[in-house]
Image (tube, helix red, strand yellow):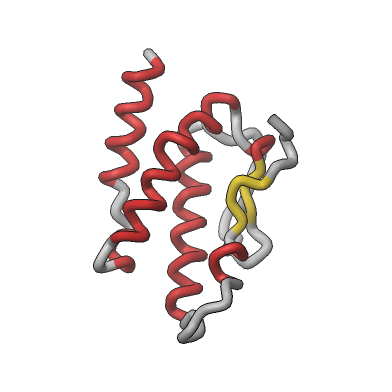
Length: 117
């Protein structure tokens, strides 16, 4: 797989044309959720580089490329992070869902059991 292939770019969501237009609060939540995804991947050893520096905030140009993830990290992204995004998209209280790591921790445990790690 092409290491430069972008698998997630926050601007894909925050720059969508929408009726009514996306609110500032919605966009800020998207940034925070992206930051949580990046830090979860980093803290679990799934990244090959620092995607966001300590204290750096996500913006429309923030992205995750295939090459930013280890081989195991890409597998986990497809298995766990995509499921987390889908769950977040369905959440009634998105502010709460952004910081609810129980789901992704459970997916990580499932992933490790499945991978035999």
